[in-house]
Length: 148
Image (cartoon, rainbow, N blue to C red; front, top):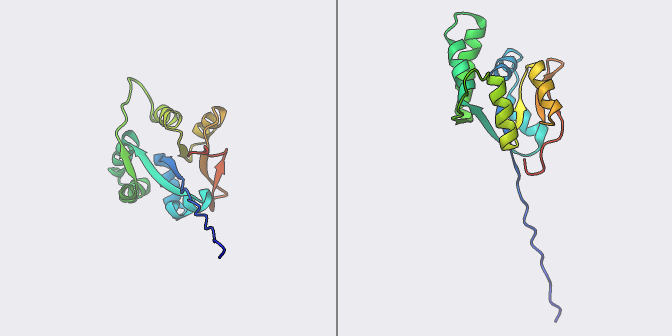
């Protein structure tokens, strides 16, 4: 009688951390992109969406405006239900962009932003960036960490 050997492969589902900037929310709403669907398709992995508390505060401040940007900020706040809000201490005179850079480096996270200066700054220190390309799709610049 022959013995059949069955090998079980354990598939490890990696989860990537993506920290979202306020202007990324606003740009994607303006272009009517489903950022959650698009990012998961782009990375082909599970995604843990993170918003640091100063970004959330920035969206609250913008939502008070009675303008198109204010209305988009209100809609962006609704999207925060699908994100993990992380309390992140702000140093004296530390800008939100500085906090995003620090968070991404400390937590090996990908940053989603529509800010070209922030994008360049992140690329200079080898942090992967997701951005809107050609006003129609998302693009990943740089390689996500192996352990995301």
